Image 1 (cartoon, rainbow, N blue to C red):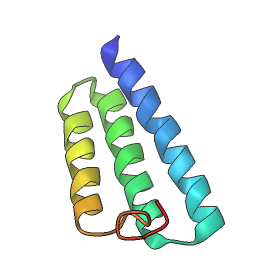
Image 2 (cartoon, helix red, strand yellow):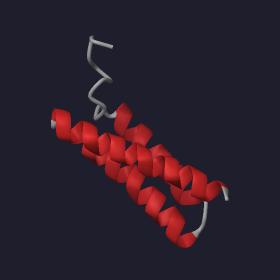
Image 3 (cartoon, rainbow, N blue to C red):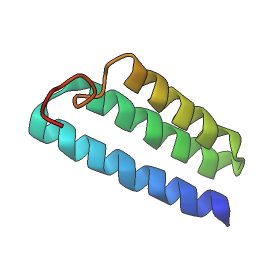
Image 4 (tube, rainbow, N blue to C red):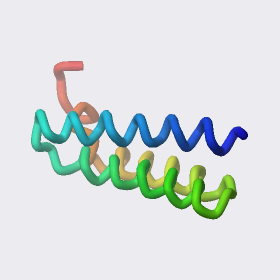
Length: 76
């Protein structure tokens, strides 16, 4: 049950990031959206928790690498 809820939240987050990519054309957003969406899809297909953790860790690594458009900007 928890896997369904967290995967659903990851899918909503991936859709939001994809929409933000459509508006801003920042390539980091689509990479992060793919990380969240792929981890949610994998977690739903094999019904295990580790793809969600891996997707979250991958998204944070991408953020630390500077692929988040608001990470290094002064307009926060």
